[in-house]
Amino acid sequence: MPLNAQHQMAILKDILSNHQTDCCGTVSECEQVERLAQAMLANGTANEQVYRTLQNICEYTQTAKSAAHLDQHIETNKQNLSQWVEELSSLS
Image (tube, rainbow, N blue to C red; front, top):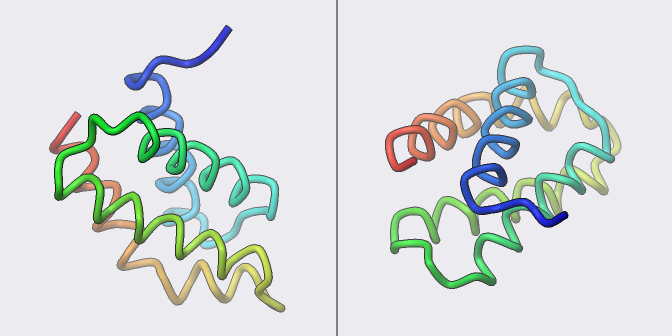
């Protein structure tokens, strides 16, 4: 059963929030975040602000998947993660 946009947004915010709070994560989580963001971009209903945020999230996950030290990458992006969760929360 496919997830609707509201469920996708909730899962996306949850994983990003956990990364921001815990400063750690897994490659699998990054892959899931990327799939969610890409699915949301593909459905074409995102406004310009959400579109930019989702693109930034995709870039973050693409870099994270190949990072030698994933937790360090997450720590480096802690402020971005916080901002993205805030932006997505204000729009959902």
